[in-house]
Image 1 (tube, rainbow, N blue to C red):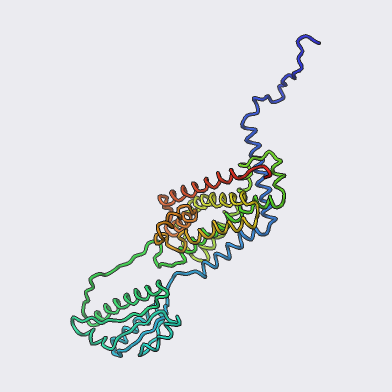
Image 2 (image 1 turned 90 degrees about the horizontal axis):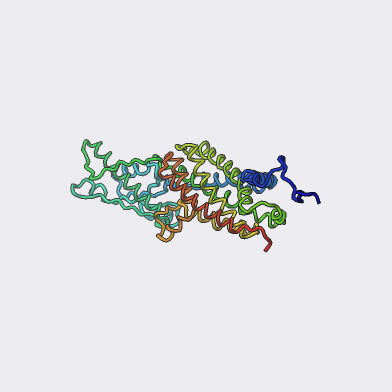
Length: 400
């Protein structure tokens, strides 16, 4: 044995010592693994026609359906006018109703001419000008009643019929007084002015809301199939054999779908602005910020579903039930949240689409109101972090 010789190898200046294996190489390895996973998933997306179908074709179909098929505008309501009084004043009032842009009217002399049409739903109301209309109108101190019979099976339309007839009646009285050189005193004169949507066009708020529904479907449904697909194809075991962690797997899987959803958002925005003429008064930066914030809970929810179910069919059904239906019913897209029961209003606070619908309608119709957008973004990110934490806890690298 040679004195002073030891079996342990000496550290060479060219070999990295243990001290050199710091955080930087580990971070680089993590980034390489995440990039490799994202690239693999992007290739899967390109190869899978159903992903492209969900991301680009389905949004187009839904946007056309919502844009052209759904409308809350009530114009040209079909009504019948019963002229029991044939005086010039009665005919003048009937003409004012018939010329209104809100009504499509037919005139008859007796009520029974319209009763069957009202029962069958062919008309939504009957406006009766009574036989003593002119006599009471010209008598000082008397009122001239006009009866409005509306179809109560559609309460909103019935309310519109009543309000529109009241408006036509006030306008006709004012015009009649001016023609006779008199001044009519009305106790209240309403001067309505509608901010952000001057013509009250329902498409202006329905189309941004439908974009939120579409993004919910894309974000949740696509990622709900990610891990489930790996389990069904038997490739999850190969991923388990690699040093990739659950967090790296989640990030690598989500990145391609985030980019895909943002690309779909661009398509939806272009269609909304240039085809449906919905004004975009906010900035592109605000639109990107709220869309990115919404995709965090949408993608996280889908990934959580996929990690739990491990079956594509079950995952897609749960995604539709837990994301699509709440987004349609509880987001304020169609039904006003303020008119819901108190318990349901509380539940809507855990629906991410509630904040996204409000944010999109604000950005499109009002502009960059950050005082309203920032709390919505914070709420979406908070729900998203919760979903991602739950997804990480349910992503286990073992065969049960």
